[in-house]
Each structure stands twice: as C-alpha cells, then as structure tokens.
Length: 448
Ligand SMILES: Nc1nc2c(ncn2[C@@H]2O[C@H](COP(=O)(O)OP(=O)(O)OP(=O)(O)O)[C@@H](O)[C@H]2O)c(=O)[nH]1
Image 1 (tube, rainbow, N blue to C red):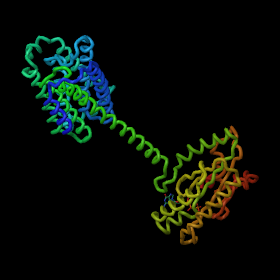
Image 2 (image 1 turned 60 degrees about the vertical axis):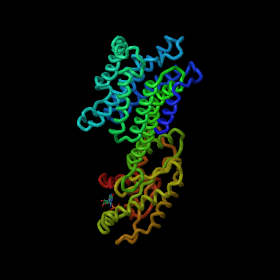
Image 3 (image 1 turned 90 degrees about the vertical axis):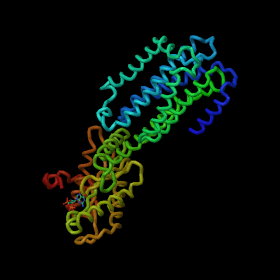
Image 4 (image 1 turned 45 degrees about the horizontal axis):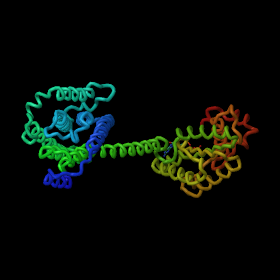
C-alpha cells in the first residue's frame, strides 16, 4: 500500500508531464476492467453461496456497478474513436460520477452488513436460487441508478457546470466517498483478514485514482496513465484473492472429502477397513474374478474364547488385544488387492483376489503364526489364539454370488471352532461331507 501511495505521489508531482500517446491503452484497460469486475461480482456471489455471509452480496453489487461503468466507458470510447482519451475528459462524465459513488456506496453497505451480521442471521440463510429477490435487487438498483445517471445530464451538468474538475462539488463528493470507504474498510475489517487486506488495497487504489482525476486528467499525462493503472489495480486485486481463496477452498474440500471417505470406510477401534467397505470391495473383486476367470479366496478369523478374555482382563484390555491382532493381520497384507476388514466383534475377514486354494492356505498359516508370535497372555489359555476358516473359488460362475463364498469360509471357521479352536480349516476339506455338516449343525449354531 505504501508503494502504491509513493508511486501515486510521484505521478502527481509530474502530473502534466506528457508521456507517449498509446491510443490503445484506455480501451485495453477498460476491457480488462470489464472482465475482472464481472468475474469478481460472480465469484463473490459464488462465495456467498458457499460461505453464507450476506455482506458478499452488496460487495458483488459494487463490482457489478463497476462492470456497468466500464462497459459504458468502452462504448463511449468506441463512439468517439476520433477522440484520443474520452475516458478522462476535463470534467467527470455522468457515468464516472455515478460509478464512483455507486462502487463506494455498495462497499459501505457491504461493510455495514458485515458489522451488523449477527443481528440479522436470517440474511445469511438466504440461498441463491430459492430467494432470488435480494439478488435481483442489487443489479436492479444498479440499473435504475445507472439509467438515472445517463438521463439526468442536466442535473449533473448543473452540479458540475463546465467548471474544471477540481472545483466541481460532485468530484469532491466522489473523493470524500472514496476516502470514507477506505477508512471504513480499515476500521470495520472482518474475520477474513485476506479479504480485508485486499479490499483495503482496492479502496486505497480507488481513492488514489479519484485523487489523480481531481488533480489533472489531461490525456496521456503521467497523471492520466497513473489514474488508469490504479483503476485497473483496484478491480483486479480482489479478484486475485478470490481466485486464491476458491482454489484453496476446493483443495480443502477435496482433502476433507477424502478424509471423510476414509473415516466412513474404516473401523473406529482397530483402524482397519469396516464391514461396509469389505462388502463393496468383495462385490467388485468377485465380478472382476468372474470376468477374467480368475480364482478368489476369503479367509475368516475369529479370536478364541474372547468373551472369557474380556471377562478376565476387562474390556479395555480386550480392545487392545483386538487392535494388536488387527494390526498383525494388516501387516501381512502385502499384495495389491489383498485386504483385511473387521467383520464384526472379534471376527476378521480377509479378501484375497487372484489367489487359489494353496496360496490361501499358505496365507492362513502365515496369519495364524503372526498372531501366535504376538504372545498375548490369556489367563486360562496361555496365549490368545485364533481359529481360521477359508474357502476358494477357482472360477466363480455367473450364477453365483460372493455371499456363497463367504458362507463357505464361515462354515470352515465354524468347523475349526467345533474341532477345538486354534486351527485352520479349509472349506474344500469339508466339501464332500457338507450335507452332513449342515444337518449336523442346527441353524442357530450356524450363526455362532
Ligand atoms: N473388548 C471388546 N470386546 C468385544 C468387541 N466386540 C465384541 N467383543 C466381545 O467379543 C466376545 C465374543 O464372544 P463369543 O462370540 O462368545 O466368542 P468367544 O468368546 O471368542 O468364543 P469362541 O469364538 O467360540 O472362541 C463378546 O464377549 C463380545 O463382547 C470389542 O470391540 N471390544
């Protein structure tokens, strides 16, 4: 800001010094201003939609008015293409007087809204699309004022007469308005420091811009060039910060979305995947195995006598034991696609895509050994152990579902429990006597 004031003062000291006449300078500036103010107004409305802070709506109005003025400036430039610098005539034109007042007035309204926001919380609940009236009101007021400004040439001329700009009351009014806006931005500020800083820069460059016009607006003087540059500056600074904020916002959103997804898929206690995620992944892998005619295996593990463990050591120790076992199983998942989930209570399930029966059995042995190696002491049974049941489908058929494979692994696990726990049973071993097993185990036992 100090740099801007210093450059501005320097230009003022050499106010009338003529510079090279760049005929395209004013149209280029006006075009950039039209684009940047329109984008700023739209981004501010977008930000309101996200942040629900009503003051952003009049702030968008301020930039919408600026855009209207810049369009008007472009048109007048085109209409008087013979004139080298119609943007800065010796008197302030109607539109420039209008937009300088309008721009500042809307910023002041925005600041006041921000100040009293807590008294009108219902304003922040207005949503774009549903309640269109407040949003239509801003451009509507802008257009009405604009038409007034265009059609009241007599009123403005009377006020400004043909006096030099520096003696025109409207010009001074415009300067006072710009100075008040800057002072209010500094005084009221807000919680969003970045927006406040950049709004201050915009308000200060606007104040400098008006000051330059007041001192002298001879086309192509150093003062005139400075005034053009400042108008460019005052419209693009907030745009830059808005783009920065929106990109930051979308980055934050993506991060929190993936964190949320991660949380939704994980089991809170053990940190491994939960049953819901397992069901999703098992379905996907099952279909893939069907498509490419590949084998797929499922392994089910259940901690032995865990009820007794809980009763003897307490639930907290029980939780610790569950975590340790979950981590030990997780540590053995080395192939891409293999994964473990907590199936419920003290039961875990491991999905092994592209794995045939022998590979699955080797994995079961590895897991059994890994849990033995933990050497978690248990009062009645020496060390905590697990029972494992597993099943494999070499080529899953079209008319079958993953739940069939799951029930087979479950049946193998149940058999391991029945045979005395702390062992591995493969479903394929049971297969010939399956009918026998099913009739042997009544349905209520099957859901152990
Ligand atoms: N600490 C703790 N215990 C749990 C948790 N979830 C389930 N349990 C306990 O795990 C025990 C499971 O008991 P049962 O289904 O009878 O199985 P078990 O005692 O291991 O017997 P078998 O499986 O036949 O060896 C119950 O006491 C549950 O309260 C948990 O998140 N934390």
